[in-house]
Length: 85
Image 1 (cartoon, rainbow, N blue to C red):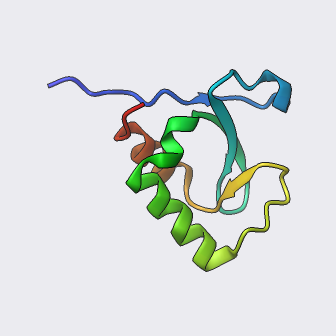
Image 2 (cartoon, rainbow, N blue to C red; image 1 turned 135 degrees about the horizontal axis):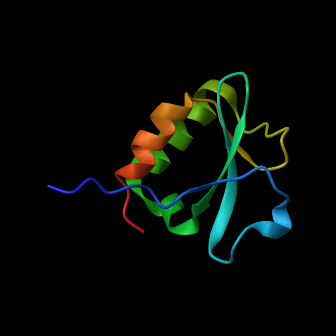
């Protein structure tokens, strides 16, 4: 059985370096890391559940200028590795 790696790009670059069809998200509880993910992830039920939990707990305040998801990085990578583009 093969292990599928997520198609996410971890960068610390500006918004203009986000490829077409992708969006930047900031992940972390204290120290935020920037990930570039396919827009298709936004329609996935697992990802929508994560966004809903973030909204319930923290609202929609995104001080980093992009979508902020306050969860552990390993949880985010594990979840996105299970999503299909």
